[in-house]
Length: 234
Length: 234
Image 1 (cartoon, rainbow over the protein chains, first blue to last red):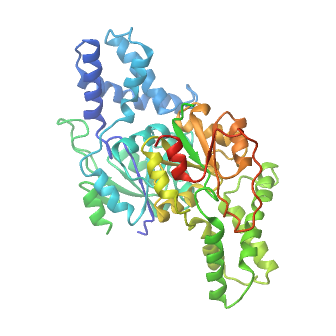
Image 2: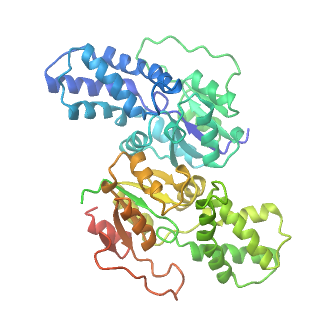
Image 3: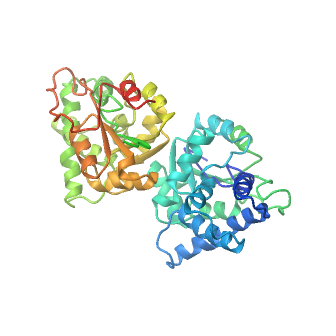
């Protein structure tokens, strides 16, 4: 392996979207004086995201930033929860909860170590402004911010992985995708990238089943970003 | 003015390309044991860049990264200087001198102050890898790296300024271009952006004529990035 750059999936890999979104939903509920099952609401919001991307992929929707997809899903979920009358500004603020996600405890320290040896970038389906705001708030030390938005394709479409290598001016096999999701890593591998799986057992709370990964399927298997830095000599 | 984000031209505005490129050319000459007028060579290299962009703009060349344009100009200049036989790897290394430019003395400190109040991004004709490598080497604290390359258009085409605002999810009049070049600022202004002129009297060495700027043409006139931070309350 001759790794020159590391590209990081963000939701679930760098940031704990679920705890952060639940906390934002709870604050939203308090502001309205209503109570719902906000953990279930957060899970439903996230579950709406792959089908929404599929609508873009099939051409049923024109290219739409993830902020736009998140908002379409949110409006539907608010209606289902009997909360149709929320002012637009409050819906917008809530929708931008995805810009205000907290990192996993090891993320910033691990990225800082990895940055000393490699170029480190986001490679997320989140739009550029979302990733930029997230990084600024959470002090994530990216060398640059690369998003599916730049290619008009969502991961795991190969255009995203290959477009990232082209922008960084490295060969696909000099670029390593770091992700907590086998489907993302498999997309990267099909496109010729190196792959590092990072385990995030708490991404879906306490109850998610273990992920199925074939032995040797990915180039690196890491417990967290500090372990990844150890394994890559950073 | 309701500034939410600042976009920075880089060559000449953030980094002192001329001194840096001259030093790289001198090192290149020493490695070959040849002597030329390297200051004139650097100026010719830079002077070849607007006509090369125009060839892209007119469709005579397909979209080409600035690294590619720089290399085409460099190969011609080496031939004119009687240095045709230089190995490809040495030409590539020299061409990447533009990735290794030193910032003006106030740049990193000024950007750090401005970053505390605004989103700060590059908005350069340099390609993403060039800007990323430059920032990493010079510790420039960008929130993100936005380049003409992302839009397939070179400044001062309006697509670049408007594309930057779209990626940052701000209105054009919430985005301020910071540049040392009136032509760039005029392009931004035509696209509806705010503008800040920063004086860089040494960009072309000691001898350049003062720039012609109409009173009130730009929203802010600053001596350097620290003065810009003062004026913007950062």
